[in-house]
Length: 186
Ligand code: ADP
Ligand code: RBF
Ligand code: MG
Image (cartoon, rainbow, N blue to C red; front, side, top):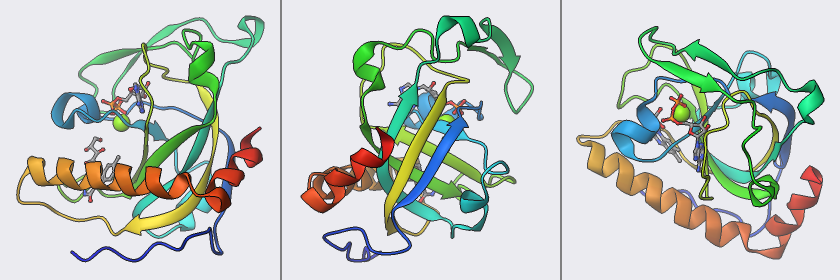
């Protein structure tokens, strides 16, 4: 695949700002099978995500830690496959530095490599979290398009492409015209 050229500043329709959505459970493959965790976001609540073409995108994300008085009690929920269970903590374990405006890459689509039957929006955040944050409320902006979704002959090649996505995203997000879009999330 030759990757599309990425402009040196966001060009319309970007930036696309998505406010006050939340982390839901996926299949649990991100961490276990590819070693790249992705916070899954519900598509059906967000018209911008329903109409956006499938593919890989980049931008910034801000997790919100609600005050303890309005945060639901931690809860155990079943995964999409109904098999394993996960704890929804609603972001109550997040540390102050986890709440800064962080760079991210986003995959929107059918994950052809895994033959999903449901379109998924998944965000990998370039940050080292010490705990999960299922149920956490968050806002993000989409600042550009990296490439189409692809099928792969091996999981290693999928991982390699995601690592390249991360590098290209970080290089562009450093540029002033992209970096200044952080202010949308303050
Ligand atoms: P799932 O299929 O349930 O989304 P993953 O294996 O993709 O499972 O793991 C995702 C979860 O890992 C996220 O919901 C989040 O709580 C946590 N997580 C930890 N570090 C990160 C990170 N850097 N980016 C995204 N999610 C992360
Ligand atoms: N899955 C695919 O099948 N094809 C892809 O091209 C693809 N690109 C991705 C790019 C990024 C930046 C991320 C975070 C994920 C991508 N995935 C892709 C999704 C990956 O298969 C998914 O995160 C795991 O299946 C865990 O749900
Ligand atoms: Mg995930």
